[in-house]
Length: 299
Image (cartoon, rainbow, N blue to C red; front, side, top):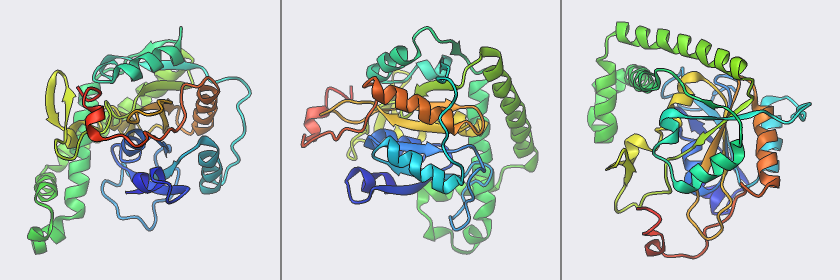
């Protein structure tokens, strides 16, 4: 809703919440800029929690200048330009799979001769993220589920009940993996000498409401489970990520994630500005086209 209202031009900006991708994925599908800051850098007071160790809030905007101004207000820190252009690399492995060809071309153009980093144990990261989210969400809602389970949406209810039944030892093991993963990614940034990593945001354009499935690993699967395939691991690591829209007038929107070091939002803005000046990114409305005009794009 927050992304749609900005994309429709009803508001200049809106806030969203991101647990496993719910700022970056809507921004990608709606052709907006959307920022998930470093975990816990902004207070979440006044928002309804889901998974407290993942939840963050951040803004959606239609242009980079507004995003930078809003971030300055929200964070209380001036967005000073970095002393040197950010050093850019890309995320390989699973991040180089399940993406639109236009994203692949854009990433290659953005990164150039920069390094390609592969995160070890990525599948374990995503599994642990699912587990932590389910455990924290299930325990948050445990009392209400016991009191009025039938008032929940069935799909949500079943996930929360399953999460509430997970043993604490599994949750603790997932959190231990997360702590190690965060140390590993910090070391990887240092070893490779990069400030920003580029990856897809959503893996494709928006699916049709009448057929909410997307192509993952060669098979059509429910979109709900896998639209966050590229965002969830970044949440697990606690890193800041800025979704930027590819400049593609007259086509359904697609976005890239610019992923920074912890507390490295300034480098993300600088990278986005550089890409805007090169004409790679920029919010563009898809125009008055009918759904059938995008049929080939979704294959």
